[in-house]
Amino acid sequence: MNGLPRSGRLLSLDVFRGITIAGMILVNNPGSWSHIYPQLRHSQWHGVTFTDLIFPFFLFIVGVAITFSLSKQIESGADRKKLMLKILRRSAVIFLLGMFLSGFPKFDFSTIRIPGVLQRIAVCYLFTSIIVLRTGWKGQAYWAAGLLFFYFLAMKFIPVPGFGAGVLTPEGNFAAFIDRIFLTGHMWSQTKTWDPEGLFSTLPAIATTLTGVLTGWFLRSDKPKVEKTMWLLLIGNLGLLAGWTFDAWFPMNKSIWTSSYVIYTSGMALIFLGICYYTIEVLNWRKWTKPFALYGMNSITVFMLSGLIARLMAVIKFTNDDGTKTSLATVLYNALFSSWLPPMTASLSWAITWITGFLILMWIMDKKKIYIKI
Image (cartoon, rainbow, N blue to C red; front, top):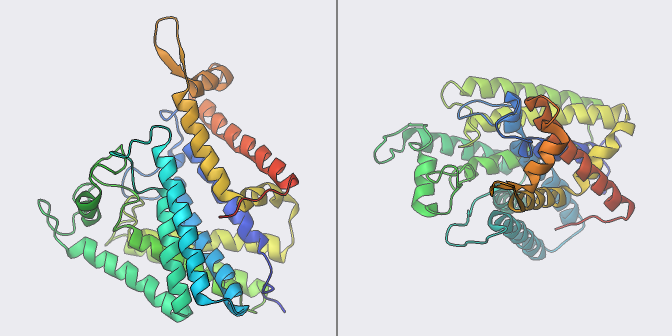
């Protein structure tokens, strides 16, 4: 049998997840937000950088994992109602973890940000899992295409009061209008009038997750591994081409998760997964994979800890001789890096140190067989 064993675990997927998590730590923890290489920043609005690939990659991976997890349980005869309860529970836990991270350490519920990365993951996981439980792969493909087309039509043709239809500026787009109706006072503090993980833009994010689901079905097939690699790379490149083409009508934009952005980033995810799959599953080059596999097996743990530690290091402050206060993060950054390295190099070195530190922690957890599952 050339396909993945029904009960098997795909190492290349764990490695892909681990690389994505390491990338997230890299872009979320610069030493100085004023000194960052362009590709390690989000696009200011339209466009795609390396940083803009991280979140859709993770949702894509969630989709692949849903296929492996749910199909395995369904094939073993698991009760659908019990499966639904597990899905609801897991979605709620992920959402609440995101809310905890949003509120930490002040927990001011009058202004707490309701959307967020984990919150969007929870919602995408919930709705994608329901679709998978109730449809086959064709139905899932229709849902993905339908969500992208509906989102395109809404964003281009539904008029926003004071702006009109088809306006894709930060405040004039339809997704931002929906955010202001339902989330005023509870949005990202840097915008306050729209949220990059807002309500309406979560619809195409569900489509991103469904592209992962469809990829999961293909990976579980009995096709030869080399053929799977070829198809992953081919469809991935077609996705890049389609995304760039669609960009002319609906620009690629991470902040409002445009349909062209979904197609392009899903294509990029297919290519990246295809490279991992060929290297690991076909050529059996596995010695280099251990660090990333460690990250991939405890991804939510790394995400939560990195967010909590970064916030703690920002709120713990030392009083200077002149009465001003300096955060622990700034003290350490200045002492270890910025005092002797060029600004951009120092900032990147700080981020790489975070990656290394969490890798050591994941290695210790792996040695002790600690894997935190939700």
